[in-house]
Length: 418
Ligand code: PLP
Image 1 (cartoon, rainbow, N blue to C red):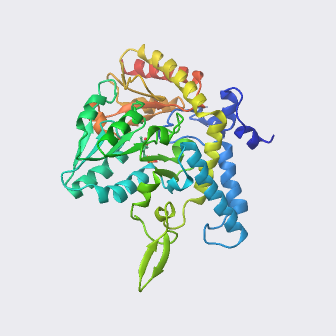
Image 2: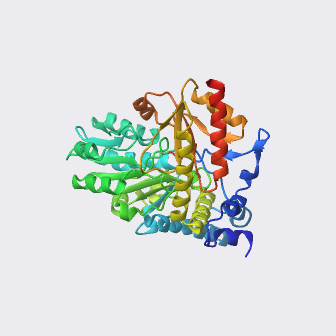
Image 3: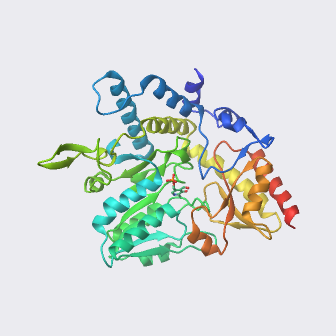
């Protein structure tokens, strides 16, 4: 087996050191220290297989897709459509045609707000989001509601950062047209009971969009089991390139949606006399030349994740999360933000007398990359009455030793600000 074959062959046992060898950036030194990369919720590192897939495409297969009769174009089209099939299998969609390639989660939410929302939401209607949403899953709905004279309702959370299911159910009514909720919170790690929430929304005839940006990197996702109508995610948070993302939509809903961007690639026929007719989905929503290499890279990333196994990843990360959380609970002056029972690998905290940005800067000097800020979740920061938090977010290539280094780094910061 060559290196690529080895890294996508099913892994008999989880071997973090072997995995780390597939991510050359993890061997980098920053500020004279070994890099400890704990900003995975912002973007993940890429395995060699993804880099090789891009290299192969650009050096051996590069051509525009769907329109060429020549061999390279056919090969590129095959790889792009194969990637769509991979994503479909990964989410357990009913068919590849339910997968639309877009730039990322943000663009996917905007497409649904535009294509579905503007057709189905009117004056007096309601859209529900949760208190813990990323701005990408708030602002498109806010804009839609403002434009249509509809109301945006917010499902509340408790102090642990768990969504209050009964209160959410109480918000649902015949007026509710769309529920848009995150699978897992980027700022807290909370995993929401999206399957139950979808069933509740459906009782009132509302459609459910799940923001899976922080779902797919950490757990196995089955859109048909969840029952959701739309599921969105970004490739770059799933070990794939930036600029590629996915909208999953049930075929009948996608079919009923008008195009958003128009141009080449999304038409059936264009005539000055008779106007334009549009291609079937998913191409109707992929105007212009898409990110062909990105889609191919995403398929390579999915193959990589599948080789380890989403369930194995979830178990490993959960163990790391528990390990680091227990240690942080013992550090004086620290308040953990987000202590839900069901969490993915995100630890957010604030420290007495120290601003999150100062903490982030001191940790950076130790080679530890964390994020300090509002994490594009300002309404959530307002709920906790903090301007920002420090967030360490995990991936399957992180180790116990890195968790120890993080805790040691945080103890050092504490000494400075005591
Ligand atoms: N939703 C969640 C939960 C996120 O964490 C993010 C990014 O951090 C997004 C949506 C937006 O993703 P992107 O910027 O890749 O479109």
